[in-house]
Length: 235
Image (cartoon, rainbow, N blue to C red; front, side, top):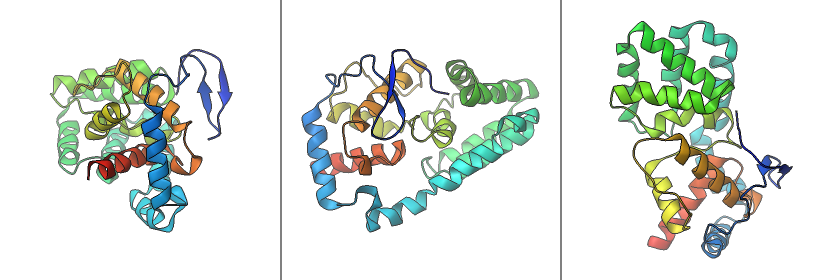
């Protein structure tokens, strides 16, 4: 669930956007447009370009979306163990998550006591279908107690549930985007926080709305484009 304040209107990507603080002054637009020109010179069709389409298939976004909608549906939350096993499968299949974090997450879930499993499951349900801030912070509290508060885990399910509206926070990507495009008021920290997530998402969606739609079929693709442009400039 996406929450926010301010009036909303449809943007060129067909999603709802908030007008409050959405003036684009808090980022380096020149660098963003340079990145756009470079990317389209390399891939004229954007992410529809044949070369990128092949890469996109490896990420299986459609399958991951379907998995979330079916296996993490609200009715499934009646069975805590089933939900947690589905969450483990989601993490294990996600190309966005490090191979080192996948088994650690699985082992952590299996080590939890019933009370903690219930807390984690309730947090995930709230994050996806209710009070997203409360859910985020409840998941965070459990993960923190086991020193496994990872951005990759806490931001994964929402972005597969709503890839047009939510963002995946990958440390190297987030730090690179903030520095390269001079995003105002954002300071990356390894420990997840709701405040950072909301502001990073707001600014990423703002940037997305300033470029050609072919560069942003979804937010993971859009942040991927940004990182490709950053790495090209570094070479």
